[in-house]
Structure formats: C-alpha cells, structure tokens
Image (tube, rainbow, N blue to C red; front, top):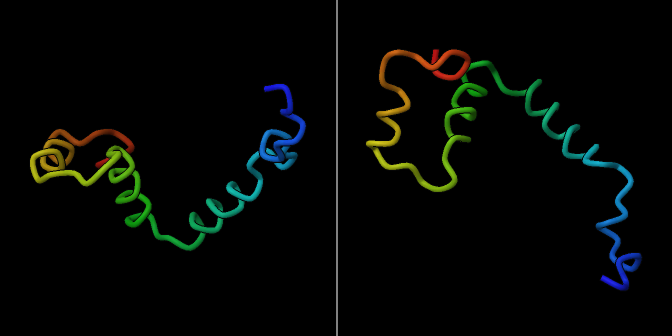
Length: 67
C-alpha cells in the first residue's frame, strides 16, 4: 500500500481500548451462568445444530467451560 498513511484504521492509537471497556462492562453486567453460556456459544462460528451442542454438553465436563 503506497498510501497507507491515509488509512485511519491502520493508525488507530487506542489499540482496542474501547473494545476492552465494552467487554469489561459486559463482564460486570452478566452473571457467571450467562458468561458460561457465552463461552460455549463462542465455540461456534455459525448456528450450531443439536448434535454439535450435545457433543459440547456431553459428560465429562470440559474444565473451565462446561463444568
């Protein structure tokens, strides 16, 4: 890119500070059960079918995720 200085996103100075503040607010707002559900949902990049969810929730528990 010859004109990379003209692209403001490449020169962002906050380094994701706003995103970190938003995530910290969600962390304070949500309870542990809600955060656990979001961690499981985060395993999938699209709608998960019943078989995929059953596999994640099947015993034994995944330490730190489904326990």
